[in-house]
Length: 393
Ligand SMILES: *Cc1c(COP(=O)(O)O)cnc(C)c1O
Image 1 (tube, rainbow, N blue to C red):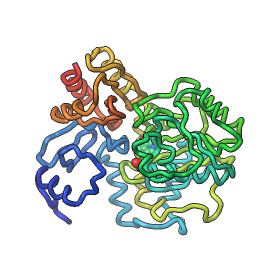
Image 2: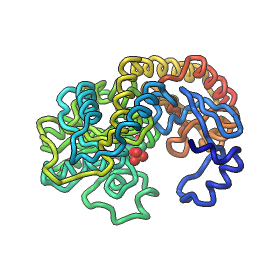
Image 3: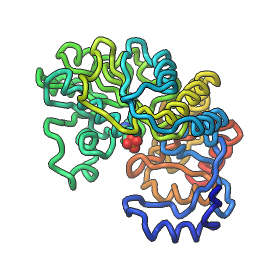
Image 4: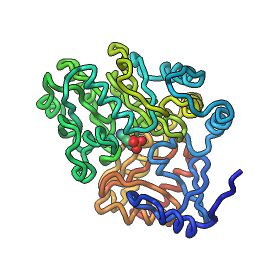
């Protein structure tokens, strides 16, 4: 066994900063251990985790079923490209197929959200023979060139232009904007059921169904990006089922494999699958990720974490609204994807929360985003509320 190489926050931070890429603004603590919704730094300080691995830790940290699946599979087989069949992959595709919205047929497995989005964009052009993609203002779909083209935030996109051609952005949650933009050259419309990075904005009732209808009418595909909303986060396994919509292409990742890197594109059965050799991934569908993902999916379903997210999220939002916090303009969200729009910039609040043992995220310059593991206890949520009251009153 390799022993822990460095012992304190200060030592770890120093060593890491000598080589780290520079792209991340770090928080100045070294997280070394977690269980459930609790994290510990290298100096032994405890935190309640409302970052949730940026959405990859719906099941909490060190979930026993995921740990056991990884430990066992590591002794059997870790890598196995899809030129071979594999028992773990077959079992996971079975389980995922049974859990997805009805009609979702084939699944392309990959390793991250942005790759899953790339797969969807490529599939849409391949299946329709059309070039154009309609994406949403404030939408977030990842950082590789194709997905980045669909991501809205100009400061993420502009330094890397020219990106892929044919992508336009329209205002989110405004059906008339999609109606005005969609043409017979539109391959796909890509949309999040709740915008996560873009400020925690749920689509209003009827919007997603109306987008689906416009896509059907014009022969364009509807790509639903559930990378952040998937796997129970918003109160159902996938948020899109709450809108009564079946996507043409469903994109998932983050909490798919209990925290292990994994992503997927699910393709509606009427569209068939990819043409032979038209796409691929070396690590995609590897047995270790598939074993972790099957354990994760089974735990989410068995423990009904979707219902837990709905109950805990509704209670938390109600408590926060009733608290009438003076720095908060609005509390909004779905399930345990919760945004507090502040009347000021969010950064100082993130620091104050961390000092008091609560880790949280921004979603744009003035929105505080809470993305706790769905297994967070009521006692931990009460502690989060106490700290939020102290910091935001
Ligand atoms: C995080 C996210 C992505 C990108 O996922 P990565 O695994 O970071 O590449 C794409 N879409 C949405 C909605 C996300 O929240």
